[in-house]
Image (tube, rainbow, N blue to C red; front, side, top):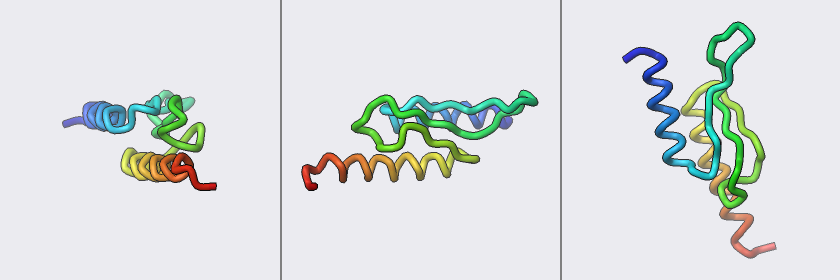
Length: 78
């Protein structure tokens, strides 16, 4: 499987697992794919408005952390 197909599969997986976010690959000035980006559109899904990471796996971990933070914030404590 080539890199583009693998990236598309990763994007589909991330989008399926984290529906409260808009997720895409940034494009660099030279036209190559850059950072993995997630933009929050459901406040129940996270805290930070935008996440950017150099790999899908790092973005996935950050999105999991955001979900934990969002659950903590909505638990009624505070």
